[in-house]
Amino acid sequence: MENATRRIIDAVRTGVGRFVAFYLSHPAGFLVAAVAWWGTFVITLTLLFGIPFRYSVETGLEIAFAITAPPDAVSNQYHAVHPHISNTPLIVQVVGAAGWTVIVFFTFLIPALVAAMIDRLPRVVLTLRSLMNAEVWGFFKHYADLLAEYTTIMVEGAELSRDGDSSVGLLLQDNRVQVLGAVASVTTYWYRERIDLNANASFMRVIQAADSTDPSAPVLYSSTTAGAHERLLELDGWAHLNEGLPQTLLLPLDDASPRPGAPYAVVHGEFDVVSDAQDADEWNRRGETPGQIEAEIAYFKHVQFRSFVSIPVHDMTNQTVIGALTVQVDKPGIFEHRNPETADLVEMLGRFCYFLAWLERKSK
Amino acid sequence: MTDVAERTETGQPYQDEKVRQTEQLRRILRRGIASSQQFQRAVDKMPGGMIKRQPR
Image 1 (cartoon, helix red, strand yellow):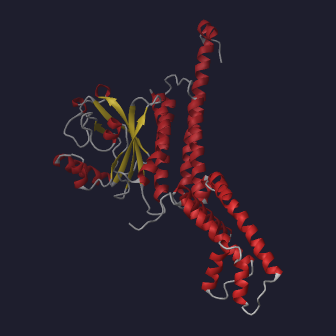
Image 2: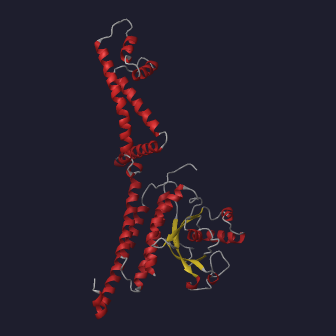
Image 3: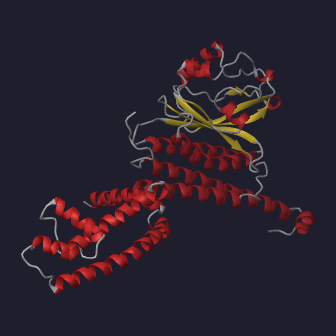
């Protein structure tokens, strides 16, 4: 019962919030507000003067129009209803005068009310809570708490030396995995009402080929080896190391024509989407050659990701890109270019990148 | 914090300080792991979601 009540309250609050948000931001909002207020005013006056709509709709409308225009509206209506009485009773005249007072009062009041509403409503009604339900509010609290905790850790740990301790290295690595886990959880949550997704996330760091531990290591969907490239992307880890996922991975990082996904995100410093990794046309549109497309489709068939988005991870000074966070899901068409849902999710996930960058720097 | 002059002169306090810092770093990193895991547990069982069901 409590749940049902909360749902109703949520529905009303979000409904009102969205309505107000709409008409305050819409160009026609003022008109809507004015008409709404004027309509309320006319109906209130009609009811106030005891001339209900029971005569007919036409009479009601006449009264509604008349009451806003001539001073004798009330007495006119009285004579219309009682044609056999020639003089106007005092009480009707008093009511007419009172009606005028109210009209004058409202004439000044309405603009004041509208002005006050426009000034105050964004603060009163357009609070975040009014635009979201209890679940979304709950999510944001967890999200904010986690980011606050990350920030605290970054501040507290800024000056602390790790002194080459290998256990610290492992803890840093575990932290990266858990941040990726949080990223995957947010992604699954993001789309949960529409579709159940299996989401995963990975972090790849930029390395110089000279730093590669094995120059003869193969580079993904490429016939070349690590030694043939100047810079590479090296897999750090997965949120969930599921069966079939590679534990090591190298991607080519060609500044002139980066491959779609993480390389593109790193080179251009902006997020990149592959909407359906099994769609040859999409790879083709991205300028991939038939041989590359075949290798890409084979790889993604093996790892069973259909849609992914790569987000650049900048260093702490925001100057250079040190790697890419990639989020993968098992359904096609989830992430799309120029889709605000994808862009909003990327905004949310981008905040996790600061901590990833800090962990990465601390690992050096 | 150990005084810099003291560190360089004796050596031992400097080592102690490094050990203390490493231990503190370990502690806050464990806190980071716990917070991330707690977040995942909470979000994984949340109903709803940001994106409303829409006809596509």
